[in-house]
Image (tube, rainbow, N blue to C red):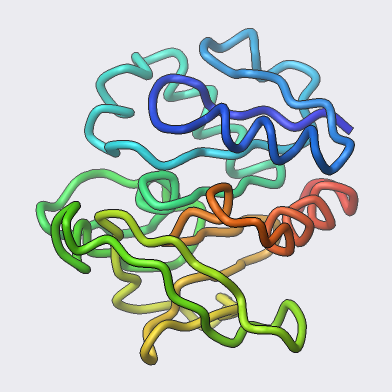
Length: 189
């Protein structure tokens, strides 16, 4: 199994390290050719508008094709990239998961927090690291909510696409990445 990590900005190294900890070959993805041969993709946090600028037209098209065909997991800005609709301010999303997401909804950098909340990924609370996090405002009928924070969805899945508004790569808890790897193992949608 080879999982790509979009490596344009954000803490892509933390995702790569987590995947390696879990015994997976992790390949950094920076250009269209890098999508060849990968079974799944992680889009890390960062700044979603910067992602759009850095991707360029060809790589953005390759990314769009990939997220509609193979397992993909977006965290924070990655979740924004995967959304059907983006607010605050509006920007294009890849429409890979039927969610409406609001950028920076939990406040500024100084409002960052670590919380524990129940999830469908086991009986123990899931540790969630929120940094300038977006909020999932609505989910479509096909979207499964895997975890919530104060009633708001923060970890969702639709088919083989997952999105988290927090940073599981910064937690010791490996369950979120393990859940994504289960999707990758099961293959394309």
